[in-house]
Image 1 (cartoon, rainbow, N blue to C red):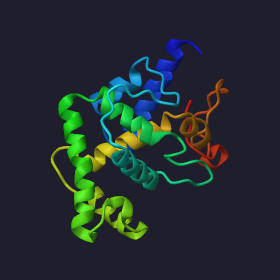
Image 2: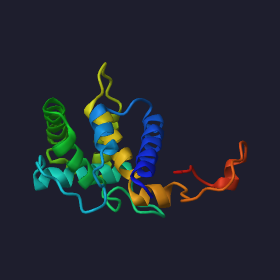
Image 3: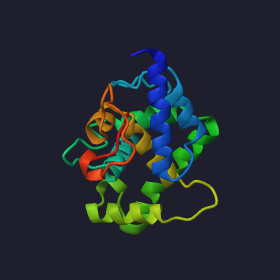
Length: 190
């Protein structure tokens, strides 16, 4: 696969993730995915923004959004590491600060509601907190919307997301315009 083929696949994947998230993908996320940076694991974060505790929080939240099923979830696909890379090395300073403030707000909300950090809350409490964040309304993109965007882009551009969750064929067959979804079984990554 040439560098240009890889970029075309990334472009198509970004377009599909933007459709799944209901809008445009942020410029920083697009720049990171469209760069020639390899997103193969392990990720090499040059300007680490997360503490170990924050990295754990990101991992737990991402895993709740995309849990393990018949395929590995967010943690298995390396989504927490991807989010760390994007926020640390690809976000502009203002975006990074806004994200870090939102991340701190998760524990603040958990402490206010349940007297514990998010990680120490029960699964039910975590679910309730994430539902509350998901239902937040704002004229601008909320922290949780940004977090979900990063989680989806990280997952569906990973090998697990593209090849195991989506249907992937390196050399797809002939075009068939209208076929029943049951015949295909899942969305295509190619």
